[in-house]
Length: 300
Image (cartoon, rainbow, N blue to C red; front, top):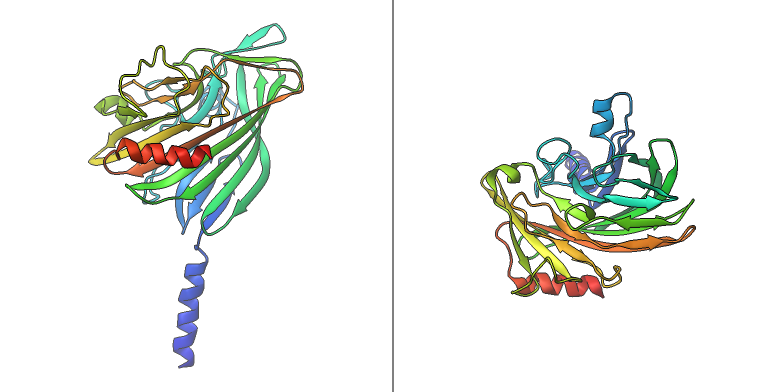
């Protein structure tokens, strides 16, 4: 009886070790978000300027989303078609400050450099991670101090398995910053695996029919479906109503990069708060009504 109890306690304890969400940092590499022992997402934090190649691999901070089994990313990293497209990422191709212009989309003239974890919280249903990122020029000027908070939540229904809320603060510490660009090269966007650029499987749905994305602005959300091997996935990009007006979606490329951008100036010493959410699932694309309901929940 004693031995049976001991074995039972061992297995119970072992299972508890992986109950709920965990945050694990691999210094100078990445931060993993796990649920019940499986990797759900990975925040890429490495920054290595030892060579041109290593700098290219690590010049921006972004978030990989993993498949439902926690085995591998379904988002794109460095390399492939348009190497600067990586997971969930932010940037503006025309970033202006103090009479200068850098490209924080293609990462020309600047890098996004991870500094530290500011805060982390985990529980049975979610994990919250806040990190400090410096947007810094090649000559060492920090023109944006970003506090990026991401909330990772397990979700269910219609094949969805993960929701990532992005609540980020962009501060202009030294001079007024103008965030500018165009729908193809600016904003907060999502890029699925490079495999999608080969199979051309990306398809999109919006909150209503008949939209002209070249003219219609301030859409609440857009959703993407794509295939990886013999599996289908989908992702919804949601822009909170507080996002600056003129928010314009780019959601039509067959390789799957999609998201939204706006033009905005941040006065010196001020901060711009941005809120987005990404819903990710496996299987066929849900109906429009499902995405609309998820957006209503987020917008509240």
